Image (cartoon, rainbow, N blue to C red; front, side):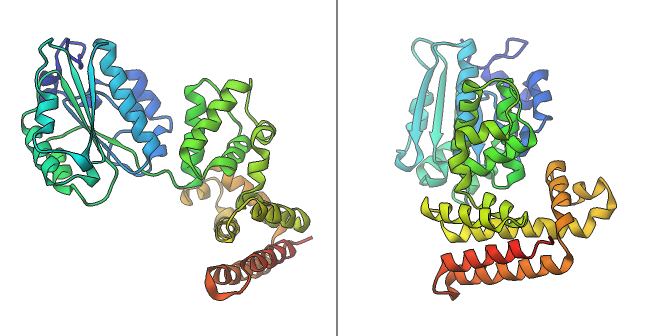
Length: 367
């Protein structure tokens, strides 16, 4: 049985030239892609993992491992819907031997379909790159080959060849910004039939947002262990200790003018092993947001779009600015700039430098 079947009953070999993978995506999946999932993969040239579909050759490209794993799992699952007995093989590109791809994709005696997952193409030697490029010109019917490329310049010739052959690409760009992490949380919960309010999303990103896999696990835990709308209180109950150990909570307390809370959170962060550098970066990011919003807040709703901020981020900064003067903001930015230099080698005691900066930031808030 063919591992890829379209509504007209065509197999892998038939689909290769005639019908791009995105054209066969269901209307339901297409709608979901328009509801924010594309944001979770950053500025990718391919479709998000939620739209990954089998094809004779599929390129899964980008450094975000969790999204790449999901894309590969989805492709295998889609093949198994029509061929439960499909044979799945994995190849490590770094140890690939010449001709291995030809062996793995050769027709089966039992006419079963095959999926070949080639992992780590960015580490591949010439043997794989040459074999894979030749395979693009003549893919084997009833076989799905997935090329997993984690990024970088190695294998660029193969990537260019795949592009010329119009190989379907799944983009797995790294999720870096808070906005993208928030979008990821919203999508994770939505796919599970759940929702979180803005503060709940922010609290979850603050707590475990440094690692996407951990963020996904936290979403799954909240879905399994709670009911109803997920708010900040629920997140604090499950991840409160970890939230306190991040620089974002220190920054929030300092910007609010709560020096006592900011210092207490800072010392707890140090006690749990947090480095001074990301704490300074978090405080600096909050102050930059205030400065940006302060420069455009008289322009109404269009200002948030102009700054590429989520509405809740813009609204929060606007509220914070009620306690700040331009002079106070300048003092705070200067204090953080000094701390940044000191924690990166210009000072003798990085922790003292951060605590002094936090106190100065909190002290600059208008009472």
